Structures are given as C-alpha cells and as structure tokens.
Image (tube, rainbow, N blue to C red; front, side, top):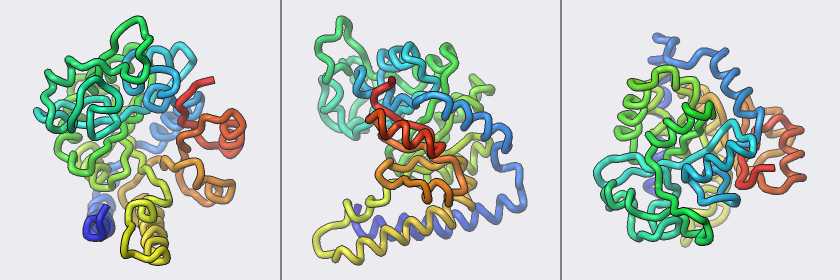
Length: 295
C-alpha cells in the first residue's frame, strides 16, 4: 500500500461515509433491523467460525472443507472471494492461483472455465478425491442446504460493482438468504457500495492494527507509520462504523483485549484463533471465534 493509496482510502472513507450518513438520516430504513442483526450475531457466536472452512483441517475455501466443518459442528463458515477475468465470483483467498491450486497466475487474469478445471487440494495431496475451487454460488447453495451462515470476505478494493452484482443475483434467487450471510471486508468502499444498494445486508469491517506499519516501509519513520495507523483506527471507530452502519468488527486476536471489547460499540469476531487456551479466553470476553481448526 503506497502513501497515495493510503491517503485516498482515508479521504474516501471520511467524506464518502459522511455523505452516506446524511442520506441515512433522511432514509433511516437503509440498515438491517436491530433484531435481525442480534439474531444473526447470536448464531454466529454460538459455535466456532470455520476460517476458510477450516484451513488446517481440509483444503481451504472448498466445499470439501465446508462439509467437514459442518460435520464438526460449525454453524458459520468464513470464506474469501476473488473474481475471474470474466467476472465470476470464486471462493479463493489469494490474488493468485499458485498457493492453493495446481494453476498459476492472477485470479483476475484467468477465465472461469480455467479456474473450474483446476485442483484445489494443493496442500492436501493425500486426499482420496480431487477438490475444485467453488464459485460463490456453489457456497450459497451449500449454505442453504446445510443451514449455515456465510461470512463473505471480499478481498479486493476494486470489486464494488462486481460485489453488488453478485449480491443482487443471490438475493434475486434466494430473498430469505439476506439473514444468512454477511459481507465483510478490509475495504470501506466495498461496504459503502453494499450499504447503498443492499441496505438490509449485514456488514462487517475487518481490521488489523498494524496494517499501515506493515505496509508502509522505506523512507517513512516508524512514528509516522504509527500515527497514520492510529489515524485510520480513529476513522474506523468514529467515521466508518457509525456512519456506514457497520454491524460487526472482525479484529485480529493480537489486538483484542478486555478493555477493547468493553469499549467497542459492536460485536467482535476475532481471528485467527487456533490455540485452545486462546479460544477459551476470547469466548470469556464474549467474542466470536474465527479459527482454522474446529474442536
């Protein structure tokens, strides 16, 4: 993330969010119902959340992993979305195909037919069957069949129109599914677009507190990076969350403590928590647990 990209994100978030906030004051129905959000969060927190379907237990972001997670008692599955060259939403985390499939190159440069032809069990070569990269539609149908919630993590900040189109397509076919999934993202513009076009969809903002310190390097002194990181944190809590009507926060577990949870105005899902003792601690704090391995 370069400095210009960072400044763009900050100013877009602040002024875009403020504009949408004025709209929401005039049209207060542009948010999910409080009781729907509460019921959704209660179900999400009622079991451990399978991160990428349980990435330590099965090939991540595959229907094979989702089935295994459900058998272990998962009621919520977190998955990632990237788009192919022809605009199909695929369930895959990385920007490239290399790590999790037998393909290579950027997901955005590959056709949907090519992605569908790949094997997605690259890290589980001893499986008795080959698994494929599912589409988002495949995941939605799985969720409906097995009555599980999906947390759909949109990985790219330039996908606004595509995400809105995907959500429109899903809700056109399955209107009741609006209470069975949430769109989550690191990118406020994604959540902005969803809140504009699909106000009843539950949203979550993902944040790790060292984003800027990790990504800004080179000539920028640590104190500058730290200041920008805290500035972004301020924007999240006092602009993004209240104005975009965010319903949940997804925060990396290293940044969550008792005072953080107490001061937060929203439910917190913490990731990625794999150690049993840490799981117990965050459950005690009332957080939802996003994990690579289900107990």
